[in-house]
Image 1: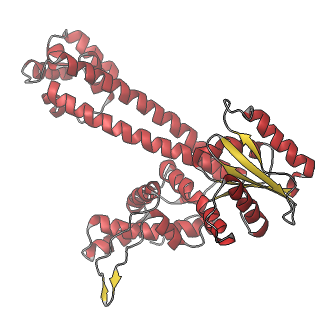
Image 2: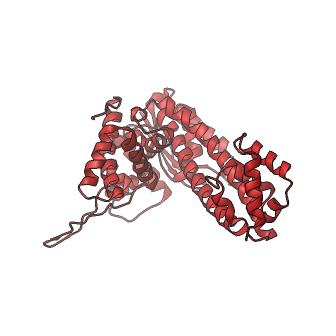
Image 3: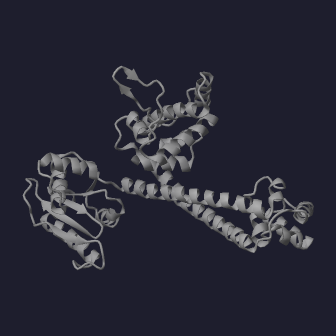
Length: 398
């Protein structure tokens, strides 16, 4: 068996290759991750690594490659290794750090030492290889976190849009079910203040509203909005009007980006065939985050570790004879997983009678709504963990 340990950095990666006895088959060599490096071209270096490994073993199954999960710096190299069918293990840097300290009492940390630690871990420890399903989950994690950021940015823009509406046409909010409608966006994108709407020809205003609302609004609504605009106390600021128009355009762009991202997420979730999707109330968005953040629960031995990772476990304070009786959630770990579990629980409690009854019992005990939901979230986490580990569909307990 041939083992290759790679210490990943931003601009370069140091690699050490050894045999099953730990004997070095070559000196530690460096491959670049930067086109402007003096070492050479990254593609050529990656190819050289592959050739170097093949010279020691023609059978790829007899090769094991290990590298640290150092953010996005390892993405290109990892993709190359997987594409060339090289069995690869991605190791947590904290694990490597603790292992290195256990090998020696000296406080020595260099790239070559790290490469040696990684290759020794490959030889002596049972580490799960990175699989094609791991690659899909990694892609899913990138997509769900990107969508999460887009949704937050879009929410901030919508808050700004509502603020500008209050300045430019405060009466409009009482005339429509919501400011965040296609018809309202179309109206204010073309006529961005009360004066512009009041001076608009009725036929043009009617056609604008009718087209944007797909026939829901007609002449009557146009008259109502124009009359309100004539008596409006809204500002006629040209600067604010321009800001409003551009904010609408940004919201529409972001909503389109969110839709495109979701279109990439859904097929990946379908291909994973996760039993999470059999739980009433959990759709693609929440299921995708839960699967991505937990790595489909591959590295968790029990549900309590998942709760700890999500920051849903209660904090404990004890000193001497004092033990806190008002423990709160620690709220550490993955904020994305905590968000998904908490929101998924609300939907599940609505659609599944068993969880609905459980939430009602907690409320009857006098617990606040969010506290009761957190209890239900812990129960849901344990159910999800069991379903994934046993690959069984959800069965309601009502």
